[in-house]
Length: 429
Length: 168
Image 1 (tube, helix red, strand yellow):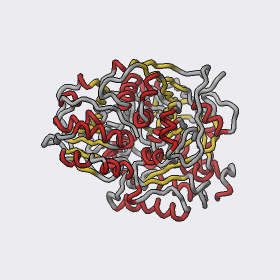
Image 2 (cartoon, rainbow over the protein chains, first blue to last red; image 1 turned 135 degrees about the vertical axis):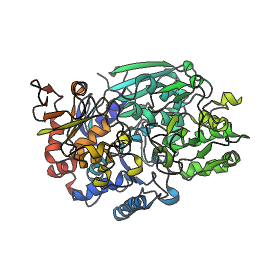
Image 3 (cartoon, chains in turn blue, brown; image 1 turned 45 degrees about the vertical axis):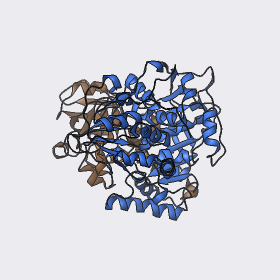
Image 4 (cartoon, each protein chain N blue to C red; image 1 turned 90 degrees about the vertical axis):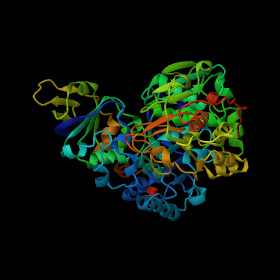
């Protein structure tokens, strides 16, 4: 019987001809990533086990992106543990100061993860890299320690769910809306322990930014990994970035799937996930009147240049409502510079936005925009759990960048149509 | 492994932000993390538990972030094990990798209330409610996971198996 792309990558890295769902394997890891929250524990575990050097100084990536620039003394101590470890180990891929970007946007951008890779990261949104046609899964700190020491890790081969997108996208509908819609359909545990493979004619029209956003949020349905079959669009993206040779895998026509979900995207409008689960979705036309206090545009989900261009298109010649704090965070230094060069910063500043240096910051209630009791925020992020962005009595509504930008102007949750703005042509870098 | 203690019950989809909010994870100190365990789900939790108590929850326990601070906080709070209808996969990995016993049973969740006392026989996969004659069967722990727990976690397991010895 044939194999899915996920099974092929796992088999290849385990040195096996074939794997099947449920099979426990030990697999070689191409890239292992940690950040300022998870890596301190991994480094401690690595040392406690007697580790002296990492398996490959070019394949352990350390990015202090969550609480940096250091938000307090405890965070500064953790960042220092990372800096000292990177220095002592001679890690070539350590990003600090003005080189810090939100890890899941930074690693693909810098070509550190490539198609066909098996990548792990001590962060749940590591699944983002599946957009490249790689197997990528979030793990814990002890897993990262094990991978740093041995260059290998144990995996249970997942079953694969096939999601087939068909039809033409409506205006303002992006990868964010597709994945929110899917999570709304299957629930926050609808894909637990499974791979989610995204195919169908619509996928061929999706930019890499859309695909990254979709793969990024598969964890919100409980999935182990999300994956796309690499194509010309993937090739365009990686050709100018890849730091290593890459391999394109495809699923066999007779591969076995646990389930198939066919979705007609022409029936989907921009989606909003209401508190306190990402599956609590509604179409923008069914939102009602929800007054808001803050808008955050950024994160590993929607902090790419394409996202900022969409937001700028909506915000041009507009200002945020007086009672709304608008925060824009480009995800990496490269995106920051491009946004500046393209004049997007002028549009954001004219709209009374705060522009922050790259950081995960407010997404997880870290810093740069914490919510008070009773406050409501629209965020282009991935989680709207209780207390996610601050006080346990605050609320987070997840949406795409266009909806977030329009909501900032109107002071309530709404799409750009409510401002009479029309979508511009989709662009990709 | 035999455990006996009171249970504290939580619902479905208990995420890692509820288990240990991000505002505390700039620390890796187990005792500090324990002092805020489950704070946003039940602020009184940490004051009412005693060592050996257990957490019982519905489906998808530990969903969300990969932060190992979550199982560390639970373990350091003195919680002996977590029994849930199902677990999110990264939490599941983390629990075995760092040696927190976990079991899957939806039936238990439906039958117990806060403060009830239960006995868990991890080796035989049985849970007994004190005062009840008929034990519940729980999913058996896969042999590889049992080995991890026996060895004291993933890192100790690797060292024992001589994995990565060239880097030690």
